[in-house]
Length: 276
Length: 209
Image (cartoon, rainbow over all chains, first blue to last red; front, side):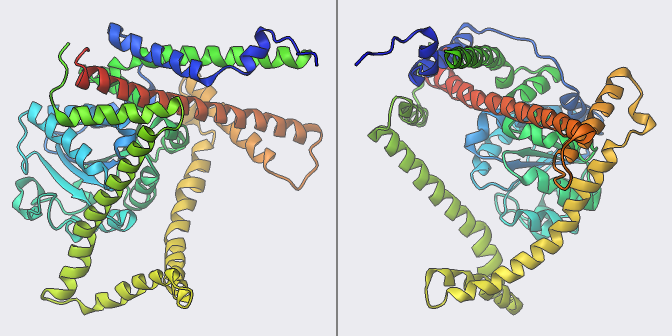
């Protein structure tokens, strides 16, 4: 039996995936280890998200909805912290609520960390309502009275005990909703609250969801869109507070270059072997 | 370099490495980490649901004064879904499902029409305010052309020839660009997750960064 001689192009078509993993690992780890920095270009969608929060007055109340869990934490947690820093810097009051059970501890951790940085007082400057199941029903009913579903906060304290909540009853008292989304809840905010109650909404979404969320921005149903780690890095740049979003950008770019190279080499290999 | 002394950081780091060991091949360490994750997340979710839903929404309104007896009907309706676990009583699930499907469709269809169709079509109109600058003009024309060509591509009641066929071909190009954008964002998202873990391992665990 004559064994077919394999050339370089055959090799590109059957490359061991372990080699790809190692190369991707190296191009991600090296920029982090070397502390490489990269400037990011601000996209109009993130800029409009920033401008929307920038336009709020002090003492305005916003809702931040934590609709993600640890699996999406690397992308959405930097967004949460950047938005909280921006809001607290402007003395905007924050209500945090959670629709993903596993999002509760990470949302709470982010909120407490940033609130401490800015010396904010629980109950006066921010409140954590915690998790409630029933997402869409909760969203709709909050248009009548937030207390229908959130009689108490995450610590089981009555909402009326908190000074900042005394005059907050429904969406008429909320200046903006910021949804941080790893699933379909952003869509629900737009459809059940934006359309129905004419509520201003900004969404921060995972990279996977960004492309499908753009139509909401283009049609004016949301006022800003922050997409993936890149979006978080852009927001950190805008508020001039570098965080994990920006430190990951160099690794992101190098990994993208490596993947583009893999795609090019793989395609050339495919066409070269097909010609034979 | 200051390695973390927190047992929780060590545990998280070791679990991360155990999960990544799957990249080499399936192994007992990976399966252990997977099972720990499944068990923990399920237990955590159940506990959260119990204290945030069953206690305040079912137990307290029913058994503590003032008793809201009317809640018995939706609770019974909900409990009928458990009929699915019995061959004899599986028909019971039809009633809560009928309520759910009917109610949900009634609630969702008008909102979907509003946000997916009416607002999107409205946004694609070539109104004068879309032509304020060169870039916005190009964007407006591209969006209009893309919507038009893509809709033509999904129109199957006419033979694809001449101008109609050409428009459908343009539609394919727009669809491919949309797929490419979605794939690009997906790659970015997956790499972001890897970066997040590497930052955790190098910063929080090993204290190198």
